[in-house]
Image (cartoon, rainbow, N blue to C red; front, side, top):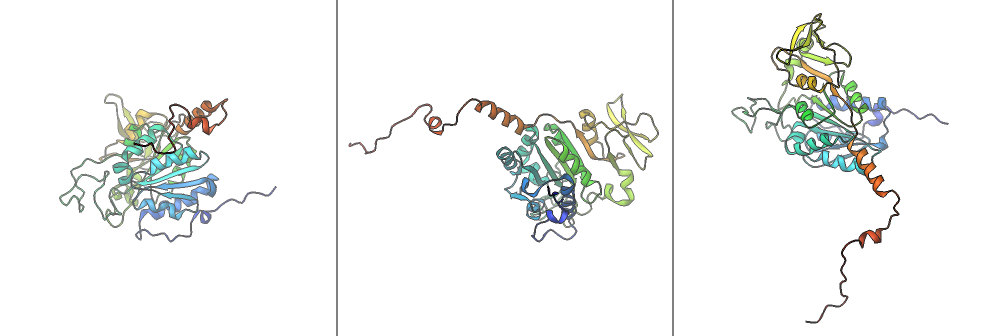
Length: 336
């Protein structure tokens, strides 16, 4: 038997010219995904990337697998139909903070609630880039844009809090240019159900360096908490850690050698909420797999229901069409 040739990152790259602004974080995410797919053992014929509208939503054009560039905010709805129509497909949804959390918020919520077996990659640059820099649902208070010339007064959406509140069973965070992004993608793919991954993605034109306070090399060690299952929540090169303040039922920063430092348990939903809601001041940003606790998927339940409903029955289209009330239409019109 001939051995199956393992695909490479180049095999996953389409022949289309990649067209994003020079320096855009989307390039890094694309490369990370293309490098990751061979490690997953995925096949081009059984993989589909589905997107909505926005800069990130050009993604399907650049993957050599199947792809579907849908309409604004509807990627999750289309992906649900694709997965139910062909459960063997490995479905990836690529969306942005505006596409998934504004016009598409309803669809995103229900996909996560239903737990469709797919991966949702939400590129969060905290701005509407494709439509020239208006503020988005994740833009911070004070963000100046063409639609908020005096600064946004909206309180921003926290994508991971939204996902947890919607019932997501897998929630993770990563950074576009960080070396750990492929590992997060692999963990998302390994999860059976809806995997939600927020990716901090830098928009060099309309919101450049908005994440610099925790992504710059000079501060990354002190401002990033990379979570690993079964390991202590340590940052600042192990000098600091995260513990639970039992009196106030909230997280706190302690010395790294403090025995109270929490060991990361991805199945602990209560701590996951605390991690994604950690204050900006004095705390690091929680990254990696924050929550992972599988449960039966929506698509498997639908397939089982259909199987049970069809058991012992022979397909008969004419009987189905004629079931219930019927009417006979005269061939000739009646005379008045």
